[in-house]
Amino acid sequence: MDEFETIARLFAPLTRGEPGALGLGDDAALLAPRPGFDLVLTKDAIVGGVHFFPDDPPAAIGAKLMRVNLSDLAAKGASPRAFLLAAALPPAVDDAWLTAFAAGIGADLDRFGGALVGGDTVSTSGPAVFSLTAIGEVPAGGMIRRAGALPGDLVCVSGTIGDAALYVAHRLHRAEVAQIDQLEDRYRYPRPRLALGAALRGLAHAGCDVSDGLVADLGHICAQSGLGAVIEAGAVPLSPAARETLARRPALLPTVLTGGDDYELVFALPPEADLAALEAVCPVSVIGRFEQGQGVRVLDRAGSPLKLDRTGWRHPVGRGDGSR
Ligand SMILES: Nc1ncnc2c1ncn2[C@@H]1O[C@H](COP(=O)(O)OP(=O)(O)O)[C@@H](O)[C@H]1O
Ligand SMILES: Cc1ncc(C[n+]2csc(CCOP(=O)(O)OP(=O)(O)O)c2C)c(N)n1
Ligand SMILES: [Mg+2]
Ligand SMILES: [Mg+2]
Ligand SMILES: [Mg+2]
Image (tube, rainbow, N blue to C red):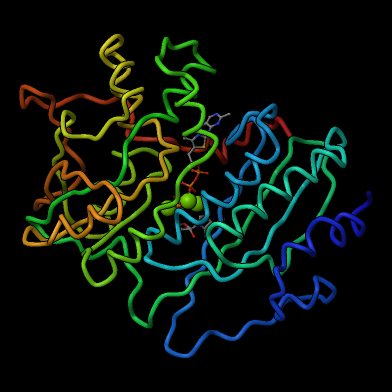
């Protein structure tokens, strides 16, 4: 298939009947915001060898592309409306690969909602790169921001933290881990917390999703809110796989706290908030408090500060080393 056959055969069906997509036949899509709603706009790209392993199943790569973006919508309390997909494809990608990749995206459109309304398909001599723009909606004025946490607010986190980072540490550095299949599944299939995000509208003072690492992303809330935070490492929620791994290899704790790829939500709740009502939507753990000051302090089980070499993932861009 060439560019246009790929668009017609694989991507046009993903418009899911959205009239504004114009059948992926025009220069641009056309959407009107629904009355009473704000649009929430976000974009994340994923790169072969950087965000996914090139031998990951293509359907999982499509799902991961969708879910890292849905996670940002979830963090803002938004529900998905439309997506724009840019695909830069190396020659090694064949029709079967692309068909499975598109099926992965389609399955998540069915699962989470929204429609593909446009994009771009190009060739590249580098690794595969996929960029998705996600357009979501929130009731007007309802977007949850990184700014707005107050001193004394609870630091809360959804689900469990660290599985995907342990998987990456295993693949890249041969870290010894338990229940590798569970960890791999968490790495390949993040679970965007859309229902929790919606439940947090009007309740959470601030929120963010955890992509770079728990400590780094909590730090983003702190920076935007003009506060600090203190969390207890022992209160960070772990899956059975991560718990078993840490029991055997306690030195992997920093990987869990700072490794990223969690796509859980970290958020600020007033202390009087009804946690039980949120628990009905998704597991939520209180791991600390916001406080006056700046930066995130992490305490170990003895209450002593834990020294971390880094707080999360940072792409090394702008080095200008001439290796183009
Ligand atoms: N190349 C870029 N151009 C414009 N804005 C950008 C660019 N890269 C990142 N941003 C913006 O910077 C902020 C932080 O980005 P990022 O760390 O990627 O957020 P997230 O971790 O939620 O995906 C976001 O508001 C994002 O839109
Ligand atoms: C093959 C591979 N190596 C390493 C990682 C770890 N990793 C790569 S990027 C990243 C952070 C999240 O990506 P980013 O582009 O910063 O997303 P954003 O914060 O913008 O949502 C992590 C944890 C991975 N996911 N896959
Ligand atoms: Mg981003
Ligand atoms: Mg993101
Ligand atoms: Mg984010």
